[in-house]
Length: 64
Image (cartoon, rainbow, N blue to C red):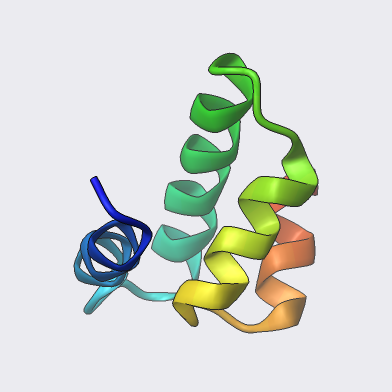
């Protein structure tokens, strides 16, 4: 899967979610990618690049 198609898929997954749902989804994503050997910083950078949530929400997603 190319990076662009992964970003599109991520955007679709987050589309229409409210703030709480975005935090839960981001937290699940972060846990998943970390279980596959990526870092929390990598996961946050990917979500930031996908533009699916605000910077504040991103910070809360790792402490949620």
